[in-house]
Every structure is written in C-alpha cells, then in structure tokens.
Amino acid sequence: MFDLTLIKADVLKLRRRRGMLALAFLVTVGAAALIYTIAAVKHGSNPIKYGPAGGLKNYHSSISFLNPMVLVVAALVGATAGAADIESGVFRDLAATGRSRVALFGSRMFAGWAVVLTVVAAAAALTTVAASILAGPLPAPGATAVLDGTVSLLLAGALGTAVAVGLSALVGSRGPVIAILLGFELAILPLLSSLQSLGVARQAIPTGALERIAGTTPSGAVQMTLLTAVLVLVAWLAAAFLAGVWRTRTQEI
Image (cartoon, rainbow, N blue to C red):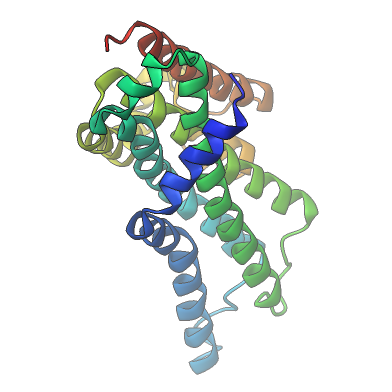
C-alpha cells in the first residue's frame, strides 16, 4: 500500500495544478491574512471602538472560520487526486501493469494529504503568529489552545481529503464530487448541526467533532467528550478509506 514512487508521482501531478494550489492558499492562508489585516487596520484607526486584532478569542474565531475553508480545499485537492487518473485513462494502464490496486488508491490518498496538510500547516502557523503578535493587552493563545486549534485544522484537512479521494474512486469523476462535497460541507452539515431535534445523533456530524477538538463549540451545539469526537472522525476516515479501496479493487478496466 505504501509505494513511495507512486506517492511522489501523484504529489507531482497535484503540484503541477498551479491554479488549484493558488486557490487553496487563497481561501485559507490568504483569507486568514486578510481578516487579521483588516482587524489590525480598524484597531489602528480607532482603538477605542475596535479591540486588538489578535488574542485568544479572535484566535478561536479564526479557527472556526478556517475549519470549513480547509474542508473546501480538501474537497478540491482530494477530488482531483482521486479522479485524475480515472478521467485521463491512466488508471487503466497502471492497473494493467499488475500494480497493487490498494497501492494505487493509497498513493492518491497520501498525495492529497501531503498537499492539503502543507496548506493547512501554513494557515495554522499564520493564524497563531498573528493572534499572538496582535494580541495587545488581551491574553494571547497559549500552547494548549494553539495545539487544539492546529490539530483541529489538520484533522479537518485529513478527513476532508480522505472523503474526497474515496468518493472520487466511487464516482470516477472530479466535478460531481466537488459539487457534492461543497454542498454537503457548506450547506447540509451546518443545517444538520443546528437541528436540535436530532438530539445526540448530532454527535455523528464531523464538524461538531472538529469544533470539540478545537475548543470552539458554539452555544446550543451538541456537547460531546473528546473521546467521542476522536471516534467520530476515525469512523468517517475509515468509511471513506474502505469505500475507496473497495471501489478501486473492483473497478473494471
């Protein structure tokens, strides 16, 4: 399953998509930089009306904003990693050589993780630095808060990528997967999270688990233990991986 040659080749394919990478950095690193820049300018122009741009509270707000943005990036990159070879017909040639199909799927997954987690790490680092430097008299995010927020973003990237790669293997096309995931992540998940009638069933929603890990669970949201949050994310990751492996192994060439 761990074929470094295949993984490096798939990473290179993703890196060549400069437009996609630029968009990935724009909606994460660029968006975070813009938010803190605007907040800093406002504070500088009217410090009485506008508080410091950084601090712990603003750090938590930034993490809450970045988590769905990371899922968007993961959908774009993961769908591309998972479906590019299928759409171009390269998968048929690779499978015909006798390479392990599990290894072929695994290389897409790890290549997607390599790209997405690099973007996420950059966004997390920028957010941490900005929230600390621009805290002013406010309490800056401590080591625990930074660890929780960073881990939450990395898990969002890992989960979103796994789901996108797995779904791409099932569907076999990049466009529909991106459309499905963006609609699901940006519209359906927030709606489900707000439906208190679902009761404890809302614990199965991955965005709630990410908020719990980050320590940014909003009021009115379902409460869960840290262990439950971790198990929810592991279950989603496992389901995406197993579905993708199954489809890759049974796909006709």
